[in-house]
Length: 374
Ligand SMILES: NC(=O)c1ccc[n+]([C@@H]2O[C@H](COP(=O)([O-])OP(=O)(O)OC[C@H]3O[C@@H](n4cnc5c(N)ncnc54)[C@H](O)[C@@H]3O)[C@@H](O)[C@H]2O)c1
Image 1 (cartoon, rainbow, N blue to C red):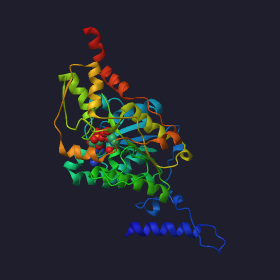
Image 2 (image 1 turned 45 degrees about the horizontal axis):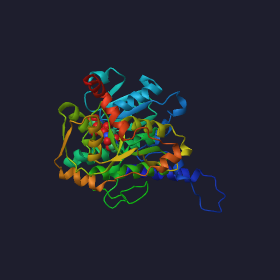
Image 3 (image 1 turned 30 degrees about the vertical axis):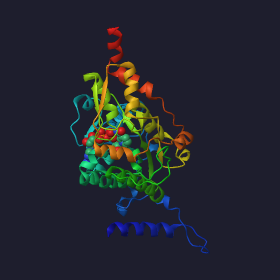
Image 4 (image 1 turned 90 degrees about the vertical axis):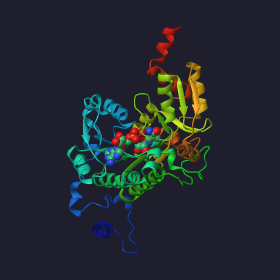
């Protein structure tokens, strides 16, 4: 196979060119061989773009029209300049997104198109957000396998070929029922029971493998469930924690699809996006690992409802359990141990449950409504 031949040729050349005294086996730090398996030898001089060549990184975000991408683009554009951050997706962007900065069509299953975008735009950072989330993935396993696993392979190869810094988010869903659940540490048994979780463990392991084998600058955070006001979630098990705000405001009623005592780690979107920028900017020698848990708070639907009812006493919450989502929630961490992120690169969350609820209600103008009602 050409791929295998290329790797062995590269490895052989590297081994032969290593200075040795001849008295011991030649050993090479393999992480210095920065070729990806798909790279052809004639491309070897192609590593022309590196972060140090530019004042700012040039960032490409895949799957950028989901819950998190637009907010991340806004944060990164503020930091690095509007034209240095390109959003991409396979969907048509709403006009406010289209007019807020560069947008490009990109299907992560199209390797050549991805490579063209990276080359033509001199991309140096790749934030890989495309994925099918937990509940959606269970409803379409073949597509989830293709986007979350085959798509990731394209991303890894392109990032390794072009010397990119690569961020891939993982999730609480990368753990399973045999993992310690309260709290879940960074390193423990990971036997998830969803295609989403399996694909994210695969991403963590492949990214770390490429880091050690090819020197890829892979960085990964395991996000908890993310709560945002201005973007809707894409079909995950923690979606209820966003939907409750929308329904509370529109109807003063919410039907929850998880049991009232389902405890899951959660985070406000601003904390999540800031963590992503911070880990991408962290000096490489501060990172003792390449995949970190990050956490902010942990609550049940009942606790969230009670916090909301402090401000909206008229809110009624009922429960109609979705067995698929409930089984997923029951297999996930209840609490996340993120002490390594706090120690290594200074992670610190800003939002606990009361601040989260207040911020969400402020966004929807509820404070104003209550103030004027009084
Ligand atoms: N939102 C959360 O609570 C949460 C929690 C943990 C991890 N994450 C991870 O963060 C990332 C972003 O999450 P999100 O909530 O924004 O997801 P989302 O489901 O809202 O958005 C994913 C995007 O990927 C795009 N996409 C699908 N197939 C594609 C393809 N073939 N090529 C290019 N794009 C494609 C979709 O059009 C969509 O816009 C995901 O990798 C997810 O696993 C999210």
